[in-house]
Each structure stands twice: as C-alpha cells, then as structure tokens.
Length: 118
Image 1 (cartoon, rainbow, N blue to C red):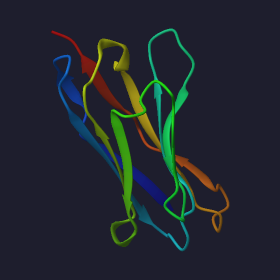
Image 2 (cartoon, rainbow, N blue to C red; image 1 turned 90 degrees about the vertical axis):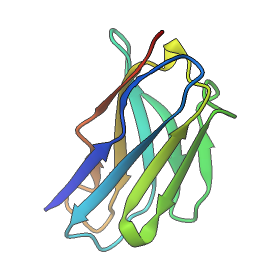
Image 3 (tube, one colour; image 1 turned 90 degrees about the horizontal axis):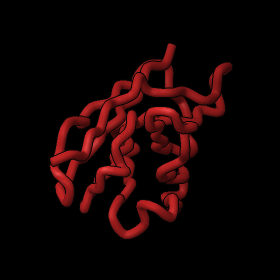
Image 4 (tube, rainbow, N blue to C red; image 1 turned 60 degrees about the vertical axis):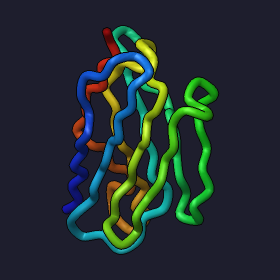
C-alpha cells in the first residue's frame, strides 16, 4: 500500500511564494519520476514540472524561471518551490509518482489548493 501526502498550499498575493511538498510512504522499493500537475476550474489537468530518477528536470513553459522542482530520495519526497506567483497559477496542485515495482505504478496525491489573489 502506497500513500502520497501533500502539503503547503494556501492563499498568497501576486508576486509571493509557496513551497509544496509531497511525501510518499508505504511499500516503496523504487521511485522513478516525481512530478507536479495542476488543474484550474474548467480546465484540463496539466503538467507543471517533473524530476526524473536521475534528477533531470522539465518544466511547463508557463512556469520556467519561477518554479523549481526538487526531490529528497532519502525521504521519498518531492518539492515544488513557487516564486513570483501569478493569479493564473491558481489551481489545485497534484503530485504524481512513478513506482515501477508496484502493481498500480502511478500514484496521485490528494491535491492541494493554491490561490493567488490580492
């Protein structure tokens, strides 16, 4: 059984910063890629950033230069540092983790709300 627990969302003013965390727990042997997605009201879920098992990163064009994804393998945790936040960053943010040795393989966090508003 694998569980992902997210934290760090909230309300922030434009230009502010937030850091999201997603910790995986349970029967974990191997973790490949870890990523963050977001879904705004009325829109499809989109990839925000991903970090591979080899620590390579990839970002959506809309967040490049503002967001930083990182991971702590000892803690099975992925982070998303968000700076210079804009109202259009408002969404529910979900982490996604690839665990290839498990039957399900891909796991989602419960989602955390990020609201950017003055």
